[in-house]
Each structure stands twice: as structure tokens, then as C-alpha cells.
Image 1 (cartoon, rainbow, N blue to C red):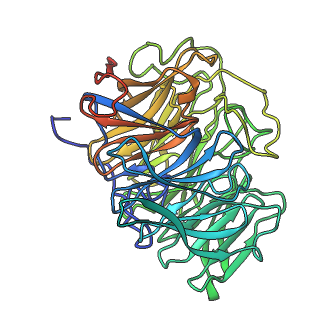
Image 2: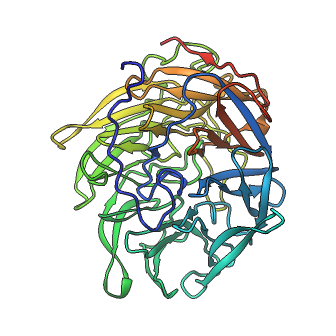
Length: 488
């Protein structure tokens, strides 16, 4: 690749008019959950870091058209959901608002609407639209602009785990108990129940093709019928394995189903299964549910040659398993899957079941798979052993994959550190790392990051947020400005 040129990744699907800016309005970037963004990140040059110490784990970082960042976090003490308003150019918080607690994953998934309001369902099963305003004295306030009661549609012991608008502005939701519903402009909710025993423990996605939901047994595409009644267009069961694996939060796929494609950005839909032994990337035609391919990914041994050399990122290559709790990156004909098998989460959702085995080394690893040009199969392009500790993001503007990595031995310890990392999507090579934390307070917990409109990489951690900013350290910078290059 010549200097200044970027590879032709894409296309992304057209922006959903009921969301905020493309790339920054959902946890996975857009309605299709591509984990790809039209924005450039900090790149491989000098960077500095700023840390927001919020005493909260922050899985959802979103940026509106006004440039302000809205973060949905869960406090370390009490596990209470709290919304923070941040200025990415500053190291402080502008405002915060505590919400009613639900389940561990309830209320994690939220989005920004076209008015920069956070849309979320709280623990009282109310659909909230939370806006922010600035008073004449300069102080900011977060407040509930709208509240829609969904208690008649969602049982007392259930919580919303997935939330997204479709292209008509209908809000779709899915619950841990396996209910999928719609909410129209008048606040009317309509639901359909998935088969008994099926749970939904990841978010949902929407596209021109429909609404995608992955349960703990099967992948679904739904559409809105008469009076916006949700109806199932197709269902594809997958191999959920014999138990929950270590490094996953539920027994089943860890994927938010992801739309992608070479023409419209939504011809295909993909997840990763939970098969015993080696897991598989499953790609379907979104229009029909027909399987395009079932491609083994994330080899249990850790994969092929180590991209980026054999430094502290790989540690000792002990025996490990195969699994992913993360949504894939998917754009054009390419899908990128990061391994989470063995990742030591401090807690898992109630009812997740025991992991088998109870623990394992965290070897990490990533796999790139391309759908063949004729759309009749898939091919593995590369595998690496990068120990990604966050949901990777692909910038189609600068042609880099951005993530955080866990540094240390495969047998994770409290002495592990965490670093910002840049990966070449063409080869899988690790291009650069830069330390962001030397303690478990900086654990990135396989959470999604945000690439902002001014080129920052903002990553949630177990205790707050770390912002990796392009350029050398300035006001508020807490680290030196030089990264660590990794030879290919």
C-alpha cells in the first residue's frame, strides 16, 4: 500500500436515518453491527492517553453529531447503570444520570437516535430517550425526554438485551427470555416469542433486509408485518456446543449478528457458533437464510504464524480452546473474528451456567475469512495470535484494525497489562502497540471501543474509559507519546 493510500474496504450499508452519525451511534458502529467505521483512528504514529476514572465498567461509548460522547456504564459497586456525558477533548465528565438496575446484560446495548438522544430500556422495562442540554451558566444536564412503558410486553423477570431501530423508525428489542418485539411511533409494543428455552444474550441488528437476532440456539431474521407485528422470515439453527465455554458469557454464540456485503452492505449475515473443539464462522444470504459457508476459525492451538512477532503479546503458547464472545467485523466480502476463549471475566450473567472447563489459558488469536467472489463459499485469508482484549474496529478511512490487547502470559494474572494495538487487515500483522494500563483497573473486558470524529480511540475499561489520542502528550496526557512498533 502506497503512502497515504487506504485499501478499498467496504461498502458500508447506507446510514439509518433514525440513528446518529454513522460509525458512532451504536456499540458496533451502525445498525448492521459491522464494527467498521468511516472515521480514521489515531493510526500508528505518536499517541498519548487520557484516563477517565469513573469507578464503572463502560461497555457502550457513543458520539453524537455535536461531538459529545455519551457513555453507558455499570458501577463497580452495586452494578448500577449510569449514563455519563463527556467532552472527548477534555478529561472530565460534563454530567451523569443513574438508571434503574436490571440484569447484568440488560441495558448494556443502547444507541443514539437522530437527535443525539440515548435510547435504552432500563430495569423498570421502560424505553427511555435521554437527551442532554446546556444551561446559560455552562452546566450540562442529562434528562429523560421520553419514556415508553413496556411492562405489558416484557415479563417482570425479564430484561431487554438488544435494541435497534429499523429503517422505518420502528424500535426493535429482544429480551434475555427470548421475546422479540417492536415499538411503533405511538409507543405500542408487539411481540413474538422464540421457542421455549431460547435466550437472547447479545444485541440485535437491522438492515434493509430485516432485523437479525441470534438466540442461544439459532439465528433469525424477522420483519414487521401488518400493524408492525414482528414475524419470523427465517431461522437457522447452529451448533451451540455441549456447554458454555470459558471466555464467553452465555451458552451459545457470542456474536451480535452482523450484516455485510460487497454491493449493498447487507447481502450477507454472519455469526460465530459455539461448537465443541473449533468454532465456525457461519455466513447466510440475508434474503433467504441460505447458508453460504461454514468456515472453521480460531484454531484451538492459537492459529498460524504469529503476526507482529513473538513479544509479550503472545506469552507462552500453551494449549487453549476456540471460541468468541465478540461480534465479528464484517465489511465488503471480509469478516474478522477475534478469539476470547479463556478470557477471565470477573462475573457472568445470572443463569449463564458453569463453564466447561471452568477456566483456560487466554491465547487470543484472530481469523480473517473472505466470502468468495461468486458468493458460493468462503476462504480463510489469515490467522494470527494477537490477544485482543476488546471488540476490534476496522477503519475504512485509514485501513487499520484497532483494538486493545492483553499483555502477559497466557495464564492470565493480576500483573497483566493492557495496550492499544493496530493491526493490518490485509495481512493480520501487528503494526504497533502503546501501553494504556499496567493493572487490572485497565482491563478492557472484551468491550467495544469508539473511534471519534477527531481521530481518538476511546476504550471502556473495568474502571472507566481510556482515550488514545493522536499526537504527543498534551494537556491531560497520562502516558508518554511513543508507541511500540512490532516487526512483521
